[in-house]
Length: 148
Image (tube, rainbow, N blue to C red; front, side):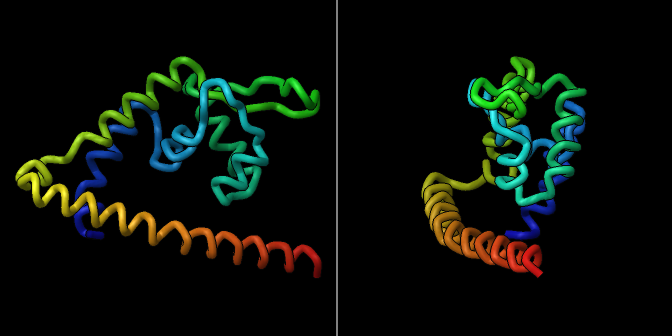
């Protein structure tokens, strides 16, 4: 599975670079929404990164015209990050493109594709609790470091 994802990565990377994005930028873009803005702190927590890094990524998306900062309607000190109309178009195009099966999968018959889909659903559902435990451990470790 690893070899397949690594082998198909250049096509995804090329697609993103045509839009001025890196894989990390695309991850950020996919987390943003058009109407419901999120604070930089919320995004940093969601992305499990330092707030300064989240700011840097949003700055890049803003320069590309894909994201914008807006004043919070409930906290005049806060800014909310939202997708711009152009960002929403790019997000939709990337989603369509990346959900299109790569040529290697087109040779599989319906039964094989259904089996593969079932396996990925199982792997995804099993990975979610593991990822949640890792995040909790990281937060606990970070909290214990700030107390010392």
